[in-house]
Length: 372
Image (cartoon, rainbow, N blue to C red):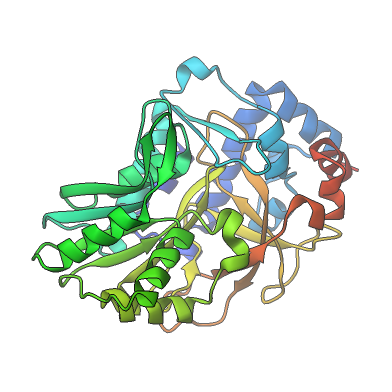
């Protein structure tokens, strides 16, 4: 079994210490694969004076050249033909540009193993019929958005009695219909089947706020979950604190914060970050996080904010071993009350292209500066 396959077969998703050597080996092997199969990536490493063989310890990963997500949104850099990718997804698109990501069968199978282990750890699997309320897109064959595919996949953690979507396709385009979702939640609250919501936190919050303003509150059946994923996107200015969100969810739907679960990830980094009972995003064995200074790109000590650099060896299709996001975050290594020793990532916010001087020069300039 290859090092990458062994890593994603890990049944203890947060056993970081014991998985350290395996992760480093998997990153080295994956880096070597892309070096040999993607001329553009080989050129990037050569210009940076970096060789896959340079990856010997976890510290060496800090020197591995990263690709900014902005670069990936404007350039397609692949290590295999798209004909070998049965699953193709795109990001939601910042400023009208989208990242393209393809999954070959090995990558897809490893992702499935990861999701299975993480979902088992967080007790998301259930044999009980469940009603799903998706604050996102109804799937369509021509919809390649990663957020749509992820939300649809979420509905298989428990057998679906029904699925309803906030963004439905009508008259040739997606239209938001929160009134229908409100009516469904009221209806479901009178039944016995648990309800699981999933999707963009902004839409979830807007509906909760609307229901509160209308003086409408219900209590969802026992076992219901409010799940959030996909970020606030263009509604970041309306983002509220987690505490305020939990309070509103309890007031309107009768769901306490222990049954509110948030996910973090990216199309370019399809690793499932799931918050613990203390609402911390512990780093799973399948990936690593480096926080970098916004000006120098140098790693900063844990506890200090900076740009979030995500690493994983999951992809065969493209050299996305190390990507630099436009998220601002902090990596914490202090003990968590949940009992996990894995460090946890706190997302502080998101910066637009205009807010990062180097990014304003364009994706090519970011990569050029990085390689100096």
